[in-house]
Image 1 (cartoon, rainbow, N blue to C red):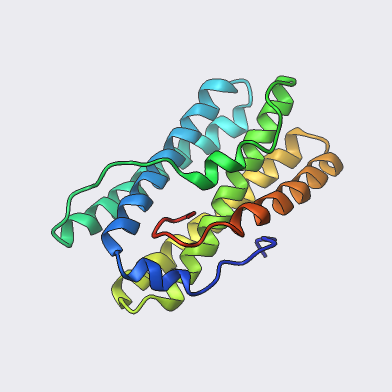
Image 2: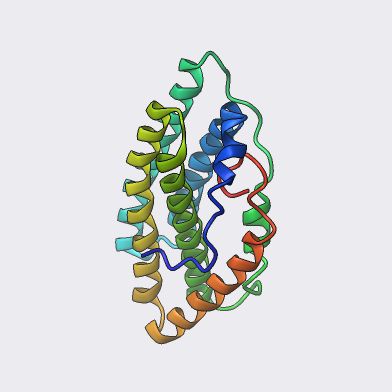
Length: 193
């Protein structure tokens, strides 16, 4: 369903289980960044009314996810750690050249967002199936459904605002590029790492 070209090696969960505190901190910041992305799309493209309406709803949902993850951190007696660069996203945004028309910039941002959500969904599915901590596994199962909806929403907007055939071709190229990035990741307790 997600169309990812390189699935995550299930052994990644073994890395995560050795440092649950770290994955929860990373996850919290991913939710915060997703909130920021939605706000940024509203600020950058206010004339796209339907997109703005959906991003308003997404801001509310993502910040509530941030709170849910933060609550999990606190329940376990920890505090939110510091944010760190997301190597996955740093590499991903190198795919499309900078510049172009406003519409092109919008399409690229929507495709990036769709792919980040798709990979998050895939990672959450893996955590929900493989984590020994059943309470946390159930938590990730619930979040997995939201991420799938976000992925399809961003991709649908890209197809709506751009030429569908061209957007689909770019999407496939981006999926191929992302698989190359993922070949070098999966060794850290990070949602995309």
